[in-house]
Each structure stands twice: as C-alpha cells, then as structure tokens.
Image 1 (spheres, rainbow, N blue to C red):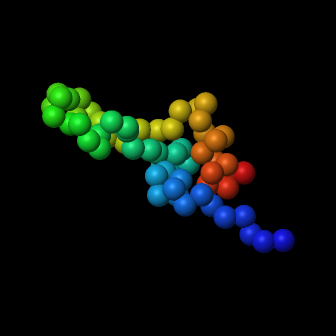
Image 2: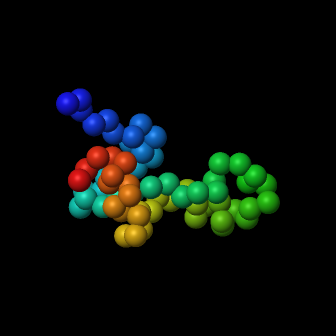
Image 3: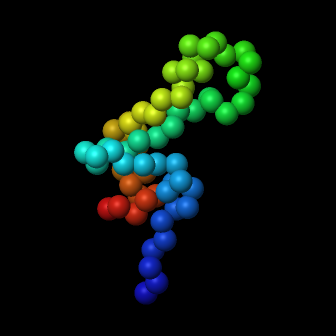
Length: 65
C-alpha cells in the first residue's frame, strides 16, 4: 500500500507554534491594497492561530491524525 501524501498547498501555508497550535497568515493582504487603510494593512501582516472549528480539517490536509 503506498504512502499517503501530505497536501502540498497546506504544508506551505501552515506552521506550528512551540505549543503545537497551528499558525496561518491573514487573508486580504495580497492585492487591492490602495483602498485599505494603513492600520488595516498593518494588522493583516501578523499571523494568527487557526480557529478551533477548522483544526480537524487542517490536520487532515497535513495528515497528522
């Protein structure tokens, strides 16, 4: 039986914290930035933790279960 592959897109998008939580980038910071305020763009640069309702889905993509 062949090995199960990790989703390539997911492994580029998600990282782990030291405590095992899953980090992600924020959306809406790629294009159409001229109409967004400086404060909004600055706050979008920070990474955040994946919501608890999505953790199972992300772990399935990363084949962690």
